Image (cartoon, rainbow, N blue to C red; front, side):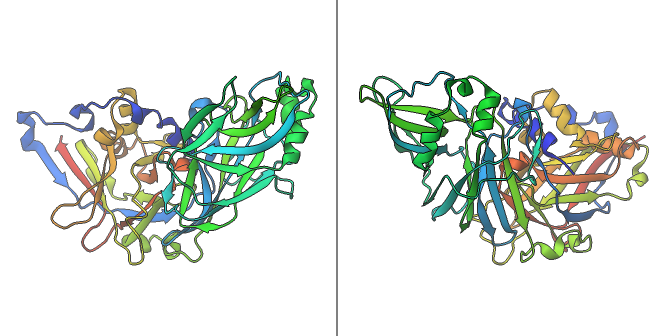
Length: 446
């Protein structure tokens, strides 16, 4: 199941101004209709934790490309281990560099952090190894989270450092005078032999995309230590890239940047999940276990499959409002303050062609430029009267189509922008004794 097309298409919408329109979610009924309204929250629900083969992490279409690139070998106390590596091409900022009579100083990789892109505990040493790609990438192809690219075995550089999200000083020698910048970044020194190779390239190579990418195919960033969190990098930042520092023929300090320009470079994330020793392992692909607990996770991790088998009993009714409700589970050994629950979950489902897409309600919200959290929901709310925090999702329009037989009765719960978040959440299952998953329906009998 490939959900990345759905998730990527929603990324811009959360930034739009919010307004509400109760009519799209089964708003207030007319007084004369109230006598015909019924309510039901006892429909049978089957819930199963499932895995994904892969998700798309690069598209040739700019609007579908990632913003946050996750990195690390994350040991989660509940969800097991996930390794996230980054594959990326870099591109010269100018087609006409002047490397005549220069003196090399250093070459470094600068990776600005993505705002709110990290997850878990990161105030510990992270190890990064940088390798050269041995195979070219193609900007016109899609790349998925289970793909690998061969690399040269000798690393171009490595570092073990404790990340800091505080701004650091960075002196940029791009102009006549040095410019002191302050931003949060991760810095990796690279071998000077790479700088020597890059300045020795013929000028014709810098003037051709294909020739440059053939000469220097790109980088793989690979984690070397296990950690209790994930880093997130903003490769689209104008400050991200490989900086070659040198002195020109006059002795003045200069730099040349090879950046991650979205056009024409390829950048994708590879995810590897290991649930073998995790708390989630007994629940994966086990519908019986889904009665008690289910799990959902970012990256290419776990999703929840929901089935509602008895919708035919509602045939002929008009749905005024359908709301899915599920509670966050409290698990022994978890660390809820370190591993916050996923901020935004969405619902997807197979359409009439069998392609898994956002449910109808989300499509309506997108078309009307409304706020996804305010109108659809999918964000955690504090529980009342001592109950756990709760998610609620509005699926009124979509569920009407299910009842009418236009669409099937299977849904999936997955994180918004799944490939860009390492967050996760455990939820109480379909038949939990106190906090079971419920589909709350208000409807009118015809």
